[in-house]
Picture 1 (cartoon, rainbow, N blue to C red):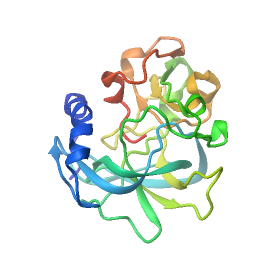
Picture 2 (picture 1 turned 135 degrees about the horizontal axis):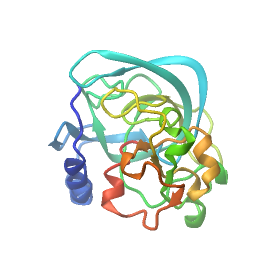
Picture 3 (picture 1 turned 180 degrees about the vertical axis):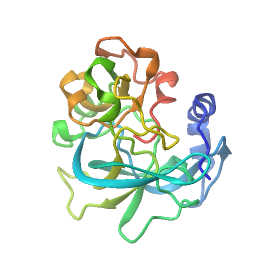
Picture 4 (picture 1 turned 90 degrees about the horizontal axis):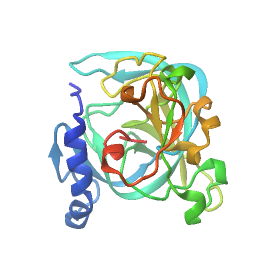
Length: 236
């Protein structure tokens, strides 16, 4: 059964993340449990700064309270990291453990990072070109139905690196919130994709619904380290 993910619990987890990472010793182990979120260790995809391409298919997701729901599917290319990461073992299309979804596969999880290689800059690892900058995509643009939620979904590791960066192709639902419910099209979306380029908002960015900003124009947010924003950016 998938459980809802309270923002407060995620904020606390983000704040504790560095010390938990130092305490972790065994790859793949779960070391901490809080409000249904757990820490996995090993390779994972980090999709928060990615944009996606709809593939015309549907994907099944776990629904809070049990059952599954289908959403339009999109393909997202995401960099692969190795280390601790936050997972919802009963969310996305996970199966209750940190165990990899299959051979040559990883899960798309979340860990706060200031720099993430991005396709828009040819996967450069230079700090300025990999810097994570969060923006709000306006609810007036119908992004609530076209953003991708990649948190806790299966990915296939790509055979070739791009500009030296290991990537994975993740299949993610469009317009789904963290509980397996559809998001209204006229909902604002918070995304770290695009380094505050508003054009990214129409390119199926990975993000999270952010209803408090409904009615606002597109805006770049000043701090990528704000824990209140990290609380919204699970899995991306």
